[in-house]
Amino acid sequence: MTMEEDIKVDEAFKKSFNLGYRVAAELNLKVPLLHNQEKIIPENPMHLGMQQFIEEAKQSKTKRQENSVEKNEKGRKGKGLGL
View 1 (tube, helix red, strand yellow):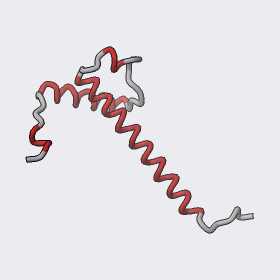
View 2: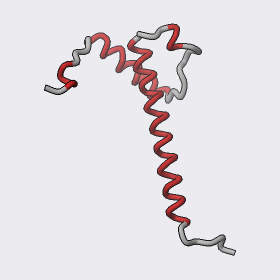
View 3: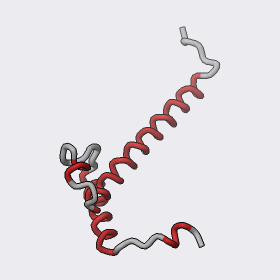
């Protein structure tokens, strides 16, 4: 039995979390809607879904930037300034 099988999530929590995630995706949120949102409503599933989207978007952007830098470095190997 894996760890994933042991975790039970309340359906209402799951629906609210997913709604928060979809709203954040639709709005393309980069930061929380409210300043100090995590302190004001720390356990709100909708907020947690929004926060999940924001964190994934940050990680995705970082990964894209790292890949871009790697491609640029590979493309320049062995090439001078072209003067």
